[in-house]
Length: 186
Image (cartoon, rainbow, N blue to C red; front, top):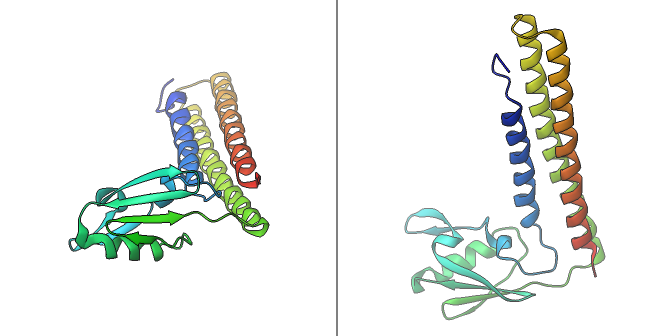
């Protein structure tokens, strides 16, 4: 495998796209409480923007409740504001240094909207995988043009790249189907 072509690197980059998709899907609200739901929230604290996890402990004591235990009493209002302003549709109840966030039951329309968003994330992941495939095939064509690999090797490696791509896209489809099922469960 000469001239910069590395199938293992291409597979690693494809797996990174799948991991990114899983991370994105974890943030989708499915009607169940999850600490990942408030992960993207950033709080204006001590003159800078910080992730919520750096100013509070997030826990899920019940299937439909998230609690946020703020460490510094002076930060409670800032954390409350950050969660409300996060476009997640969450409204915490403040009880001392603890914020309780009830996760409401999802209606049918909201579920369908979430499925559309999940499909959009999955398509972005598929596109990322296809970009990796294109990069790999471009490397092979360049190597063949430079005469550092034969045409037979180029074709064989292209087949390997295509197999890896098909496998990654199949995994994306599986992850999407699982999330779709989770969202649509009543």
